[in-house]
Amino acid sequence: MQLPAASELEWLVPEHDAPQKLLPIPDSLPISPDDGQHADIYKLRIRVRGNLEWAPPRPQIIFNVHPAPTRKIAVAKQNYRCAGCGIRTDPDYIKRLRYCEYLGKYFCQCCHENAQMVIPSRVLRKWDFSKYYVSNFSKDLLIKIWNDPLFNVQDINSALYRKVKLLNQVGLLRIQLYHMKNMFKTCRLAKDLLDSFDTVPGHLTEDLHLYSLNDLTATRKGELGPRLAELTRAGAAHVERCMLCQAKGFICEFCQNEDDIIFPFELHKCRTCEECKACYHKACFKCGSCPRCERLQARRELLAKQSLESYTSDYEEEPTEALALEAAILETT
Image 1 (cartoon, rainbow, N blue to C red):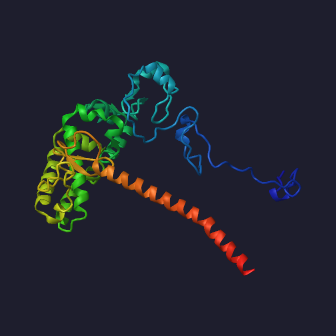
Image 2 (tube, rainbow, N blue to C red):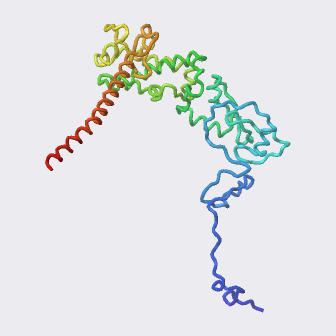
């Protein structure tokens, strides 16, 4: 017996009797990390970052030192999954997981190959440049940000300046270079000197407290300080012989010594007002307020008083003018 062709068959429910469309497929779906080997089957438009049980690590800058972990508790918080790939580990084999000192999480041996790196939080909190075991993800991230000025020492741990002599010296040199560079930008004779300033990363002469991991490491090794000191010596020599830069100096208003021109970068003998940026001798400015700030405040008060008096006189003249106008109208009528 020969079977009929498919075109000859009559379906129980023809399509024209029950028109319908395919159900819409969502743009994204969470996928279990256990099904990672089948990821090529799921052609999703948007890749979802993990699910309720696990999510891959994100590139982030961590400023705090992680407390000493308890392996059993920490792995349980990770749902017994590797923080890198999400593979599940039997509770009996958690001793095989490796701890990442940067992220503070446990990784499988494929995601953690016992690489060692300097940890930024330990440098900023304890000035500790020892190398610690990190995951492959953390290693790649730390290598990537090694030269990026991401760490503001003043905001993160200002006490580090007092504890570390080398860092304090570098900080003072950077303040000097900051004032010098601002001065040389308006000096047409300092073009070559500005080019030499550009041989160091820009943040070292433009932002007082930003450091990269490379800067902090060079500071500890004693390499960064001499480079900056050489630039400050060249800058001071230029100011001493340049008439244009000499004209930008200050005369101390306390001692009125016109033979001693002072500049903001002369930190050993100069004090700069935080408000108006005027400079005075340290020995002269021992107490009291800034004379320039006092003059500016007196001028503001005088201008405010004059403005108030002018407004009051204009207000008093208005009724008089109105009465005069009314009298003139009455006379004409």
